[in-house]
Length: 104
Image (cartoon, rainbow, N blue to C red; front, side, top):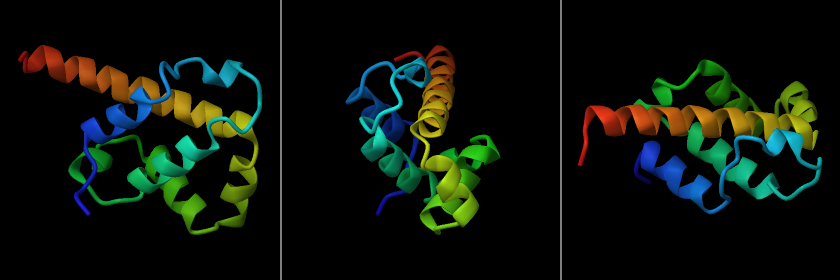
């Protein structure tokens, strides 16, 4: 399996639209699949993931490993939504910076 890069994250997020404010939405299960997919991307070794804030990668790895504290915390949709929103904003900011540095 190829290592994930920014295009993998943007392609995944594009399916769901702008996620900047999902943490303000209803605490439901609409984004559970996205959270699971993001955790799998974050847990894979890649240059892009190495440069992400450690909290994203650590949370994903702990969640997938079944760490009781992390699983309990992320069982709450509000916590999942907040993480997704932060990651979305980070990836979007990184994408914009990269596009200005390397215009096509």
